[in-house]
Amino acid sequence: MPITFRKSFRIFPGVRLNINRRSWSITVGGGDGPRYTRSSTGRDTVSQNLPGGFGYRRTTTRRRRED
Image (cartoon, rainbow, N blue to C red; front, side, top):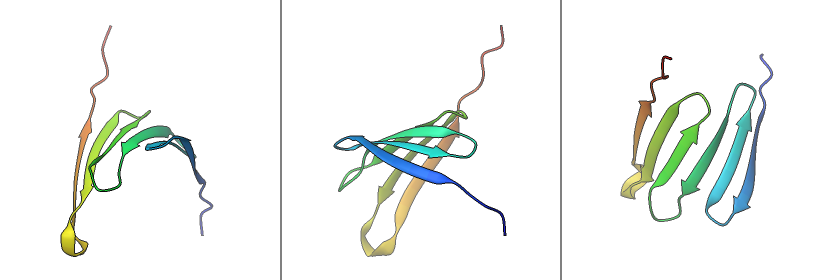
């Protein structure tokens, strides 16, 4: 079984810093509204809990700039 690492810190109310073995991310929002997450690997995610145990999540990838 592989060993994993994940830690989440609350910076301000409604703002979290998430750290894992390969990257870090900032999450803003939550509660009854949507959550916005931006990762150091270039992923942006919007997620929302919906009634009845359902949820919505959309993830996009930022392209790297080529100099």
